[in-house]
Length: 111
Length: 113
Image (cartoon, rainbow over the protein chains, first blue to last red):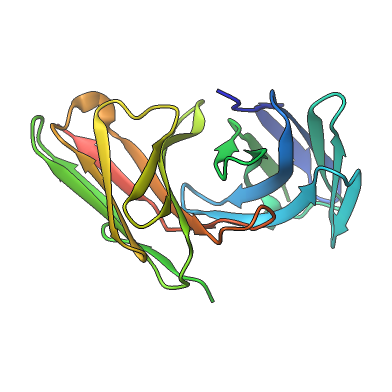
């Protein structure tokens, strides 16, 4: 399985602080995506980074990708209580079409 | 907006029953997926379909089968439900393009008693 690993498994911070979560994977990829899940509902797509990109921004989100280390990080700046959720990375191995998810990081942002 | 709809939000079935979980998407997506989600294990891919009548096994296909007779509908079948199949089941769809995001249904929480 190419399932990625995320760390930390759980993260608790105060509102206004930055949150960083990491994802590692095993095989060559076309792209890496980050998703968010609230309260055991369906996942919502946040951001996608292609294998030839190193960094991408979207609002308060910053994603980096290091293909040599097979790792990615998601930074949420100036966190809010509403950012409390589980965050998952997903990778698509080259030419398979399959999206494989990591185990997720549970983020708690305290007001 | 893309909509992925799973037929039930909560489901309780008895051991040995045949269980059907239905998923419908309204955006003509080629790819559809079934995942199960368990605490500490993240999302694990059960089956994946890239076209009508086409399917591929994911990481944990044992005990499951799938059906895709129409492009918009992807069904997950538990031939003989067991208690270790109690879980949250998530369906997703996406277009057949390597840089496409996936859209998820709201999930079906299945309890097998």
